[in-house]
Image (cartoon, rainbow, N blue to C red; front, side):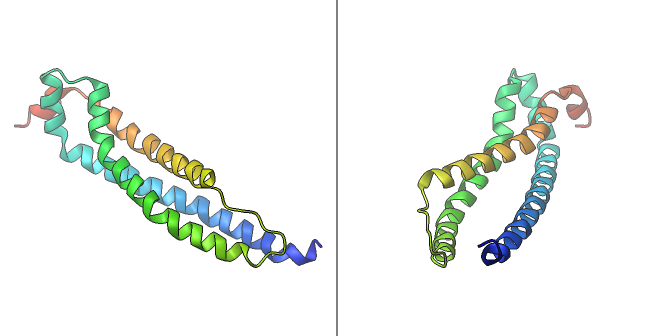
Length: 137
């Protein structure tokens, strides 16, 4: 029985390794994009802080755009992944059904990872001294 599923175990290890690498690369890209966005909006953030914006409001302002993109990606990836998983599971003798909560947990984890990645840059930009960003104008 073990030899029958040897290929599936190997495939599982390979997929897990590439998944971790893909998550790390995507977090680095998202981190860079958040840093670039915060740098581009430095003066806007400084003006908003001078006019009384809170750190929470600024973090929400900077994080909202990225979270929209992640939600759109989840909505696009869910049907494709459901179809691929259904096709893959048909090859097994004993099958399990794919439930909606599996995709919900994966989506929430993706949103959480994106939020942690982006919020670091957003908080850093929100707590910066507005005088430094407005002085160059």
